[in-house]
Length: 378
Ligand SMILES: Nc1ncnc2c1ncn2[C@@H]1O[C@H](COP(=O)(O)OP(=O)(O)O)[C@@H](O)[C@H]1O
Ligand SMILES: [Mg+2]
Figure 1 (cartoon, helix red, strand yellow):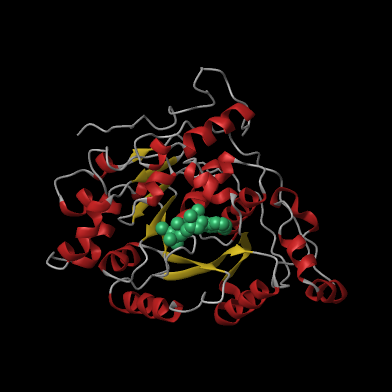
Figure 2: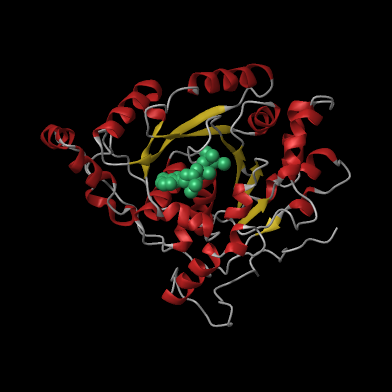
């Protein structure tokens, strides 16, 4: 089956902009930023009739290993005093984080070595980005962790597993005009999974898109044989070609999410730093436990990623509660609340490419490095 938008891997934009000029590094010119904005905010864009122009992508520099010295008790005390110093500490640019003493929780910061380039690719680690609460940053984190990892040379496949199709739109794929989506891959066993993979404009970053068709899947799956493991068997067909597959789950604990958990090696739970953050997380943990005991014994909880953090006492308290619940499974990396993220969603590019020097881009790169440092991703 013909693939729209499909280009051979790596040939998509290798350092060339639309005029054929060569781009060095991860530069984002003023001109291309304004193209983003115009494209991003036009009515046609919002109505899904037009895809915005995107900047080209460069390779991230891979700086040397960063060793963070241990913190003295005195420094620890100082940093636990006021929210400001805490936040300054965690929000230092990750690319020069040698003087970052503690994370937001006052924990000694682990050393996150710069990721080494891989000499071979696959089989992929499969990660479900899961929280049945909506609006906590699942899609944004899938796109941006995926984006950062792809810039570190990891081959990334994002599986849009939400009928809203936000991950597809956020990576510039119009899921209403492609030949086939994840829905077709689930139900048409004659379809080769490669026919639903779309290459994005960004090197090493592919997506299996979704659109509203997927909303019918929940009901249709009920009568399927082996209904919980259908996504797992679909992904088996491409697993060897990627280093990481990120499944962007929908906000529910239905059969689609069970399929994501059954296919995954582990779960990342994005949690927004707000009062209701932990409501429902206990239920999510129960679902994970059930899938682990009945379907997928290797399923792990890789960690909790705190998102939408602001420098307020409220957020600090919420972070403490999250830590009490999850202990060291709370990632050191924390994502601040930033308008740049919705901006980059609209611009259909990971923020690490759209605004590589923005604080939030650094935080997502930091998260990607932490995943590699923790051995979650190769
Ligand atoms: N750290 C953040 N700061 C500000 N806005 C954010 C942040 N993360 C996500 N958003 C915005 O919040 C909304 C919901 O995020 P999204 O990633 O779609 O959540 P989910 O997939 O969990 O429903 C989106 O409009 C997104 O742009
Ligand atoms: Mg989402």
